[in-house]
Image 1 (cartoon, rainbow, N blue to C red):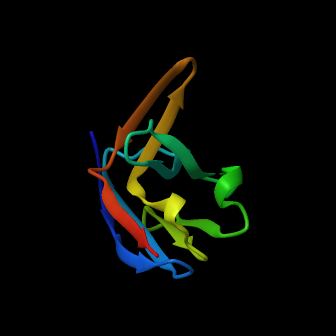
Image 2: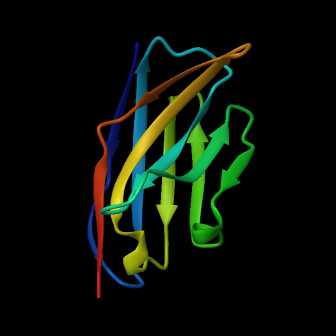
Length: 119
């Protein structure tokens, strides 16, 4: 089992910034991929950004240039720096951990943290 604990969500005005952090613990196996997904109100969960153990990132187009993902593999943490926030960024943000064993993918989710951007 892997536990993921998110922090840093909240209410911010349009154009503002927030930093989300996620700490992973438990049966962590390297290499792995960690990252963030979000679920806007009434919509499906979507990718925000992920980062591999080696530091390779995949950032979704809607947030590219505004959000930055980073990780500290020694501390098992992943951080999402969100700048120039707009109303479309309002969502519940979920931390994700995934590990592949050949064709089998094991993944875990955090409990989610609310980000609300107000105008």
